[in-house]
Image (cartoon, rainbow, N blue to C red; front, side):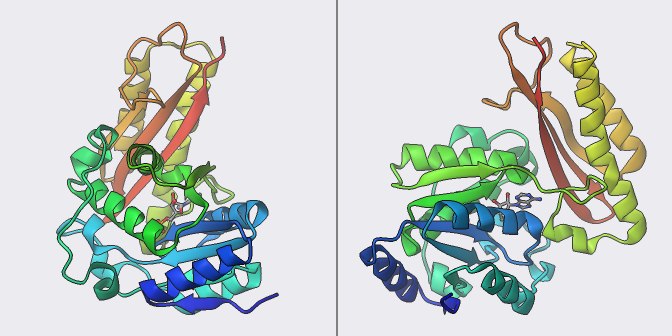
Amino acid sequence: MQALQVWKTIGQAQAGCAALKQAGKRIGVVPTMGALHDGHLSLVRGSLAQCDATVVTIFVNPTQFGPGEDLSRYPQTWDQDLAALSELGVDAVFAPTVEEMYADGTTFVEPPAISKPLEGVHRPGHFRGVATIVLKLFHAVPADAAYFGQKDYQQAMVVSRMVQDLNCPIEMNVLPIVRDADGLALSSRNAYLTPADRQRALALHQTLRDAKNRIEQGCRDGEEISEGMLSSLSDCVDSVEYALLADPATLDPISAFPKTISAVIGLIAVYVGKTRLIDNEIIHVPS
Ligand code: AMP
């Protein structure tokens, strides 16, 4: 196995990828903000399984954080991250500085319409930052395939749409959510939770399970299910930004289920203490 390379500059990353391509390798890229957990590593494994070379990017992107968000305290676990990636057999990590990625740049990507609801309402400017950094990372690491998590469902939709609209020559892959044994979706932000808050955070997955059960039992009143999600979450967490059933293709809220719909998505964003958590589940609708 080759040693893990660490690229700090865009020039190193582009030269490194050119060399891999020259050697006939299909490259997979996994964009992350570090503080890696098994969710991230499942994307890495996906890339390792489907590509000849895997590059993981680690960059805490300031332009996707709003004022008052957790940019300055975002967890960083560089040594553990490198050890885990090296152990898996990743080829390279691209970990640029903020100055390297942005210099004094003033060009941004205007994200697609699917960025407007949900996260777009509660984190204005977030997807402009996400779309911009992902495009810049794709230029720095010109891979053949990219791996994102369903955990950030709307983000994956925004990036997929950008890839289509801006003709990015990259194949998008969106892989399932990895959860702890008790159902909590893995997130770097779980590190902020006290044991008591972590217990309360189990309400997210439980609420999605309850919505799923109701649908499987035949309920087709989307509004009623969404109201149930909201009220059961409100009992457990400190505030609910959104909790609803939506159309997985458009993110439009579902009231009455259209006859032809085969799946809906439950989407949640809440605060537990000062920690913002999101979760979602695609629920197949029995015909
Ligand atoms: P982040 O470091 O939070 O920006 O996440 C980097 C990538 O990992 C994104 O594509 C996320 O959707 C994905 N990801 C984060 N948490 C999970 C998880 N629990 N399961 C699967 N993918 C995840």
